[in-house]
Length: 181
Image 1 (cartoon, rainbow, N blue to C red):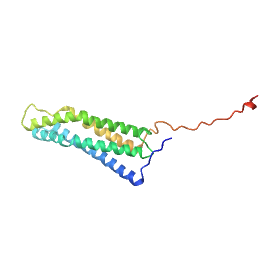
Image 2 (image 1 turned 90 degrees about the vertical axis):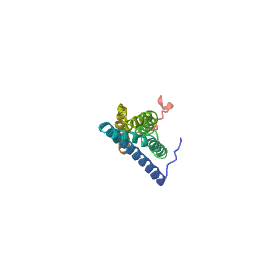
Image 3 (image 1 turned 180 degrees about the vertical axis):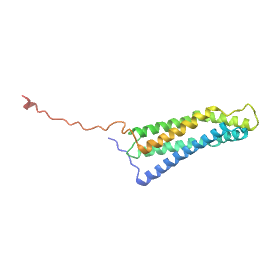
Image 4 (image 1 turned 135 degrees about the vertical axis):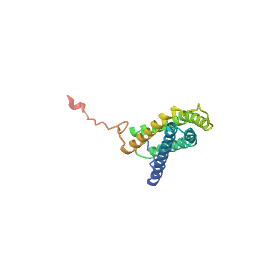
């Protein structure tokens, strides 16, 4: 039987604070990204749209990716140092999968889209009449905050219980072969 090392009360609170703050920063960056995309897509002013799209390039990738990684690492530390574990409860495992998946999407799917959008924003600001705000930025600004809010809900309500029920000792009755005749 393996034993896990539990975090002390102060250490757990410190790691939990880092976890909550990094998740909040991640959600805030996601919401700011959404505001910039909605402003860029809804305005008639090409300069406003260009500035909004260019602003995304400043904060959308590395700060968001950094917040997601800090959130993931602090979540792993909390999982390993508490009774919940990493894959002992469904809600923790789902949060871990969502975090890893979203972090990978930021690095490999959103980053190229944002780079392209920044290029388009520069063209808009330069006066290129053919430049238009890419439509591909809308799905991430809807899906990402929704998944983050789902993860928050999982943290509060802790649904679904354990992944695998703990083994119950089997109660065996002794049969005495001598008395069976």
